[in-house]
Image (cartoon, rainbow, N blue to C red; front, side, top):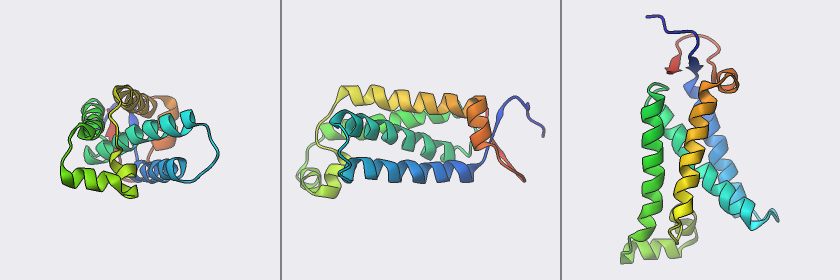
Length: 147
């Protein structure tokens, strides 16, 4: 079956590699003392968290259905933020540990929801533009598509 050539070919391997890069960048940004301003570490990490969910959902949807993948990514990222509103002894104990603070965070921030959504929307848009097509285009063989 032939697809419209104006739509982007997506290499799932490249999306996976982008996800790994995003995870490593987020960890470095939040953990390694780089001397960056709080604004950069806070909002950069928040942006990368949203980007990670875009990568995950793009992989889960096999590069198809970008609008659905975008909505699911925003929902999942938002749910992780809303989890900060849930307090149980087990969750609170986990959050008291360094890894728990890193993965779950401690304080709910409504602004984070907007940043997650913006990151996912921008990632979806970039994947559908010429920039994204150049970066994500599969080089050969079977391709999966963002359409």
